[in-house]
Image (cartoon, rainbow, N blue to C red):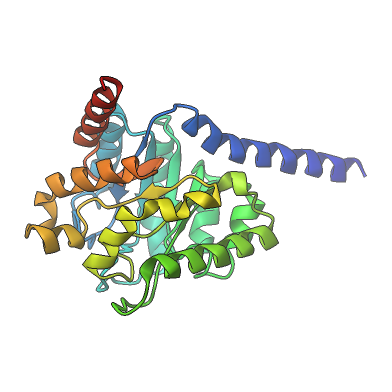
Length: 288
């Protein structure tokens, strides 16, 4: 019985800690900036630049110094337009092994961006604080269990196998979120540990990505923090043609408007310009 009581106490402690990660971040009362570290050779935005562990760690250090509230680390490309190479479990963990602990030691909460529940579990056991699932608990059938067992916050990202220009994308995202929330509830994941992300670019036409940002308030009624990751995405190119690395202006515009429309977190590649843009926008609002 003593062992059971200890186990119950540990579980309760971990649950409280997981909820507090989100609460502490949101208590800053300003939009949060999540900086991206891709330990991959094939990311659409910076393919291969940070595959070397030392470069990845240095990049994470720079993002934290520039003001990143969260560092999102991924070792398998989840590029939203197809063409990413699936990575074996052992290879994904091998890419993360020399990087994860060093990034965790920087002090900012770390989210693990992975499709695999086994990788999420491995990373959460090694100090990652948040699971970032681009299939919103609807891909790997073990993901919800892993998140629940580790009492971790989870970012539920909307996704589709392919874009369909004929659908009402806002209705589709809403239905997806409701399914994910049902999965989360059945797994024992508290709502206080859930962040919703409409998945800009994932299974969407450029027009649908724009619509998701423009109509972000459609999901505010769910009562959960919203995250928008529009950084360097292809919809920017559809409006103003530019290569991924040259889409800073479009990324800033998208994230500023996302915040105006209710986003609590923005996921970005360019932390310093985003922090500056958000600070200036806030100062202008206060001067009204």
